[in-house]
Image (cartoon, rainbow, N blue to C red):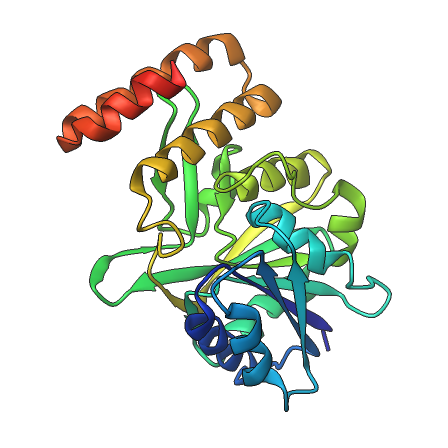
Length: 278
């Protein structure tokens, strides 16, 4: 059996985090251990989660003093997970709830080939029935990303990745290519890791039977302008590391963000982007 450790990162949303923990505990392929990382919350999250897991021997709470970003939160737990004791690490967003057989379907992909480095899940939003996806694909010319609907698209497109809201990573693969790049505060850290896995000779797959209910953006819904700043900075970092024509892409990127603000009619965001990004 594939030995799995689960990592869930919390930032000021302890109720949802405990719901995600219970979702992991209900899996038919139950994780051996669950690591909950509090990313420097100052809202009583640590106490709330601590009380909620006090009777759970299979859950460890990792407390960080400051919020250094999603990648730093994940890496704090990954460093505690000994690859000699675990075969894979399941990243599950704290605002996600997985179907009970989700992890079982994902581990099936890892068992099928030791060159599989990451396995994604189908993410669905009950309020948006046509928005199911398991990752994204980037057009390197327009710098526009689109959701992936078919698993085979991962093999077709080099610039594609599975979403870390629910992704199973092989421990040997992470030992080989490294953890998340902590320069990505939020967003695109999963795209960066997928590129490094591919460059290291690993495959990225998705199991269409592994389903996770997820409402995107809950960690940043109250800071919409800052969210776009993070997106921009992370994409710029990705361009620097992976784009075949970085100078060209760095010209296209700000134009894309400003144009999207205009199309959305969000001139507050447009002004912030123009003032802070260009």
